[in-house]
Image (tube, rainbow, N blue to C red; front, side, top):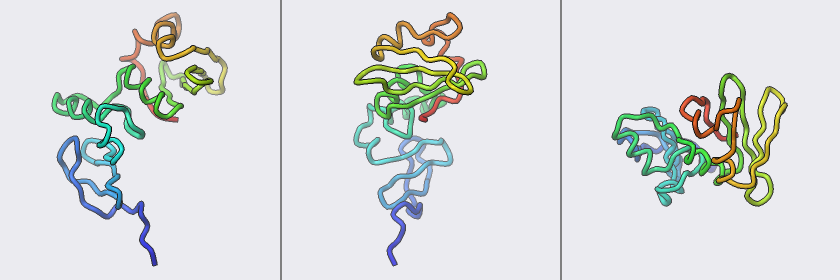
Length: 150
């Protein structure tokens, strides 16, 4: 009988906090201490945001050393979007979802059902023009919640 390759049965040291976590045969696993999802792809690309984390490995190490949360800033969030193609967040109890639109475009929808949709030609267009309630997303980013992949 073959073992499940995703079973978390290998004890490893977290790249962020140095505490033990349980990993699968590939070394992938979430640290219960700091919440970081350790994975090979992230370790091979420490300056890039790699799913399922929302900040890069090197930034997470820096934030942890500074005793700050591993919360993504807007650039990290958009890097996660570029990597995965679908991300979201909540602001004032409304969910906002970003999805890839064409090659570089971004579709932002919101509401319990998509009751609003705005399109942006690329990441720079989003940064410069995305607004919620007449406020730029870049100016309210520190107030958004539940930042995630979809």
